[in-house]
Length: 152
Image 1 (cartoon, rainbow, N blue to C red):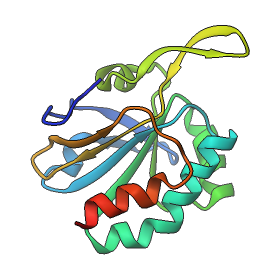
Image 2: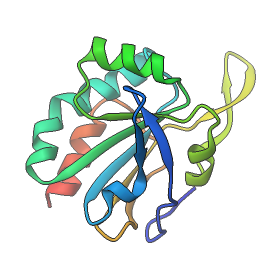
Image 3: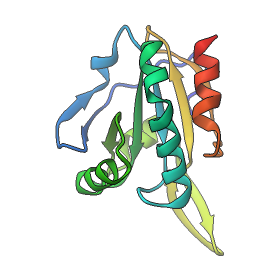
Image 4: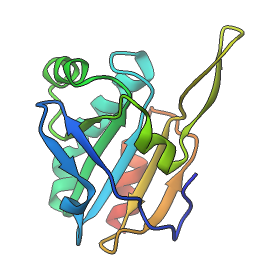
């Protein structure tokens, strides 16, 4: 997993509208990249909703938010529309970017083992380096925790 001080790998993924978003578009800006397992699941819905509620505060301090999961563009579009998500959600269907960030790995649910995204968040500075990494995120209260770090 990327650690504090690591350079963010370049990426290029589609957003909920099917537009291509490149990591280079965020050069010179602070941004948050959060990885989440699936659209419409309880924890992911809480996390997306809390980032949405705090979005204007993130904008006020000049911080972009990007959510990434392996869901397809169509799923993201439905999730964005239903949850009224004001920030960018990117589709990583082949888990290429998830692997680059080191958040793709073995998970376990109800005794079954499978591969998936480990819920994680990275705070990126203007130079494209990770200045804070959250390797195991609990959705409730996380957006506020991130906002507090970025506001100081």
